[in-house]
Amino acid sequence: MIEQKMSFLSGVVEGFYGRPWTMEQRRELFRREQKWGLNAYLYAPKDDLKHRMYWRDLYTPQEAGELQNLIASAEEHHVEFIYAISPGLDITFSNPREMATLKRKIDQVWEFGCRSFAVLFDDIESEMCPADKDAFSSLASAQVHMTNELYEHLKKPKIFLFCPTDYCGTFCTPSVAQSPYLLTVGEKLYPEIDVLWTGPKVVSKVISVESIEEVTHVIKRAPVIWDNIHANDYDPQRMMLGPFKDRPVELIPKIRGILTNPNCEFELNFVAIHTLATWCQSYCHGKAITGESSS
Image 1 (cartoon, one colour):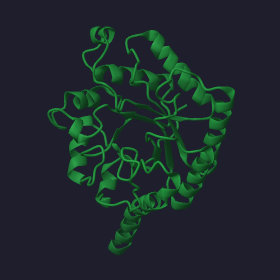
Image 2 (tube, one colour):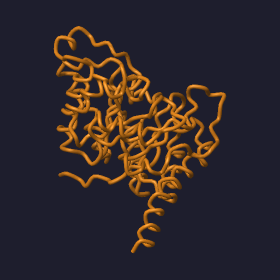
Image 3 (cartoon, one colour):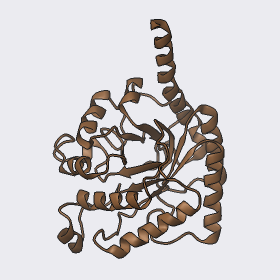
Image 4 (tube, one colour):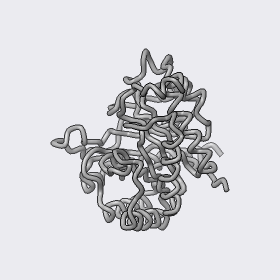
């Protein structure tokens, strides 16, 4: 059954390196998201070993129960729970057993009640193993082939996100517009699959409309912004306490959604997440005022 696609994703990605948030902190996040009008949470803590390092391993009964309860809590607060898996550290794309293992893991999470998923290939080596070099023309082709197959296996899930290895402008060679990697993603990744993008840099001080239009042209879809403006995992001595800023509201109709990847310390993120919500709502409010005044 094909579920209706959400029109605009707004919320939080727990995608940092370091100690993951607790289950109770995540439930508090869902309460705040509902109160502030945000609608999505991407589960991608780098140091959840079964998300990344040991992605092949199934969750134990205790872990399964905790995740099932968390997914139910998100649903209760009208927040879309998106489960991400990050197999890129050591997967062999050309090995059918690896694909079967990945499907088995995702099927387990489906049984928990999750209906939205993401596959992440960020922060990995770009070199393929010899078997994959024989089977695929490029890393992008291998990743896209696997992602498309998983999408088909899930029978077109509600939300499906793909994080490329070249996930920001500075990673693209020779440029965003001429990146063979991104051009392959744009040509071969199923159009129903959304692409994550951090902007011109890993931590982008400014994200302009022009930069988003450029990458949109290459990947042939509006990106979902994975915003690291408040991330501090690369420098734990710093705390990012300021508001969400330097993203014009004119970005909103140009993107598929925006998810902030904030401070590792949960309680430091009140301002970051609240001002993101205000930013999202300001565009809708402005449109309503413009519509009323012109009618």
